[in-house]
Image 1 (cartoon, one colour):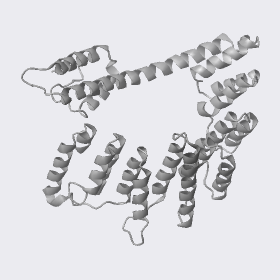
Image 2 (cartoon, helix red, strand yellow; image 1 turned 90 degrees about the vertical axis):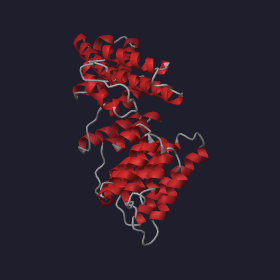
Image 3 (cartoon, helix red, strand yellow; image 1 turned 90 degrees about the horizontal axis):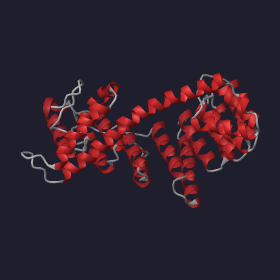
Image 4 (cartoon, one colour; image 1 turned 180 degrees about the horizontal axis):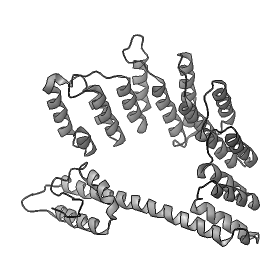
Length: 371
């Protein structure tokens, strides 16, 4: 019930519900894990101030925050770029004798957020500062005796590659191997994207071959696509065609833009017949199948977006429930259109989504009947 109220942004009802549950059964119904999950949900919804309020109200609900609660509130703050408050909580956790010392995941959240938001600033000084903070936190981890995992390394390597700090990224890659921490496909893909972006395609190919030889991951679209695009841009069309065949032979279907790029490059050099009709059909069928799956998901999300807009219109005005207003009538027409045009396989999903919102006047049945 608390998740439903949090997803529906009914915060007054959420606080009342938590207070009532904490008074029952000697407060055993509201635990630290439940409040931590609510903080996570509020953070995902972008309600950071409400997540902070939930975090600071844990004592009212007769439960104490643990390291997981601190991690979730730090993650929620980092989602919106509030690094000052996140660092304040981290410094509080690092105090000697504090009951919730930080763990590897705490530092990984901040390192990942610094690297992720570094390129969004558009300012070189801010980029340098945030990458410096990420590297500083990584060194603090090591000094405190924490052993970083492959996720921590991947976040920092990806941030260094995107900010053209390839020397530091290679140092981290060597450190991964020294610590017997096995790199995965995401580790290698960061290097592949960097080398293809700076026109060092052979080094990118070498990284992919290393990944395959060391059995550190399976090369998929995310590995082949930068290489194929870079080869087409420099005119190495036949090599791009070979990598496209290798991608298809591995059981993957290329993206539509990649497929068209290779076809246009082959046409420009007059060797379009190197791809036979059977392979053309196989690729197009795979692309169409993927489009149908994506459209099914987009259809659901577009209706949910419309549902939220109608909800905001209804609850922002003074609705007279005895005489339905225009927004309520729009909602009835909207749901009727939804049931008629939406694929029946999506009804179960919409049935769950429906109860996460504040639509209390209508019920969507699996049979498609609106009451």
